[in-house]
Amino acid sequence: MTAMPAQPVVHEVNTRVWLRELAPRTGRPLDLARVPKDAWDELTPNGVDAVWLMGVWERSPLGRSIALDNLALRASFEAAVPGIGAEDIAGSPYCIRRYVVDEALGGPAGLAAARAALDRRGVGLLLDYVPNHVAPDSPWVSEHPEYFVRGDAEDVRRDPAGFLDTGRSVLARGRDPFFPPWPDVVQLDAFAPRLRRATTEVLTGIGESCDGVRCDMAMLLLNEVFARTWGERVGPPPERDFWAEVVAGVRERHPRMVFAAEAYWDLEWALQEQGFDFCYDKRLYDRILHESAASVHDHLRADERYQRGLVRFLENHDEPRAAATLAPDKERAAAVLIATLPGATLWHEGQFTGRRIHLPVFLDRRVDEPPDQALRAFHERLLARVHRSGMRTGHWRLLECRLWPDNTSGRDLIASCWTGDAGRFLTVVNLSDHEAQARIPLPWPELGEETWELTELLFSEDRYGRSGAELLENGLYVDLPPWGTHVFGVAPAGARGTARPATT
Image (cartoon, rainbow, N blue to C red):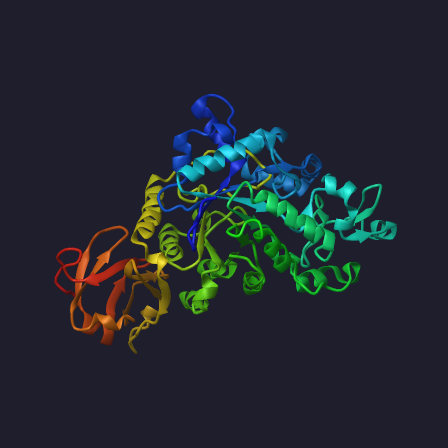
């Protein structure tokens, strides 16, 4: 098992699509055991700590058939890939028949080879787990009907979209409390003791093949949410929550296994308390895309311990592509912000090169899009420089900006700092389309009366000398263009070379 850092940088890849696009390099179809070394290198640029191979498990043939017959889904497939054929529709990676690596991807041996390739690079491996439901042709359906939310013939008659008659029993179709049932999956019963034990066993087995799991829609299994969704059908909630029991059980065998939760509805803290290392920070994503810098700043006021347990992202397989939703300068500013915050960060394959078309996860082919090489260089430099600095091994703090009565543009600046054995670091991001100025008092009393050097770490190596007394009393004067950024290392003058003369 690769020991991942406390706040890992994760690169998500759609495994089937990635392998298909690599095949022309070798002139033959590829599986995970035959990925060229340079392809692994491209997937793991400096600064990436883990790869999430999305969609490796055996997909459901029945689920695929249901998807092929769904007119709305077929329309979305055609919109993403004009002329898409049935042979390019693999079915949903979240409609899982068995937690066995698909033979088309090389089976268990292929996954073992992939993990070994990543381990040689010091990179961890994350895989999916779907706790809420399984495919209707899962062996569990016939072998363990007690694992599922049950119904009867009257339910099928009254609500055929919500219940499935398997011939042996009536099972509820999977759902969350706010949307209609999903037609291609059946609902597991989070309150059933045997299901909890089975989940623990499956996850323990998965833990033999990877360093962590990303748990799909993890909040649906919380006692409060599950009871609200299914009511009297599942009886009273158990004394212990689903995840508290399951995660503890898995960690008896895999104490360092990472658990990351897809989570919504402000339930991140509850999931962290029940054992998850990380939970999606969807709230930050929404605020960056749709709200003001002040809203982002307010979100970042949360306790540092809580924030270290969040996953920051600008896109993933469920969200639109960042290049399609953010103007180029805003995307770069947001990426600098994300990369220098506490918590895990998630980057989606194709995000670095500016892909704009959101691909439904059912498909294993996508259209060609010319890569933006400048954007790739930006992202790779960003991740590498942040990693090399060691800033995220320290303690993080949100800073306040001092404004002037006649100039409040600084309210659009997000300023924060890291302090630790690697040094002192300051990040300032202008999350607006206009210039912004402010003074930012720094929280390091040891600055004293000496001259200190501020070195740009990311896209230049400019250096600026400043008086420690001025930085403490008046703050660092910052004047950033629209979507501009600073990431400074702060050290005594002379420690990193000669400082430039001070300028205002």
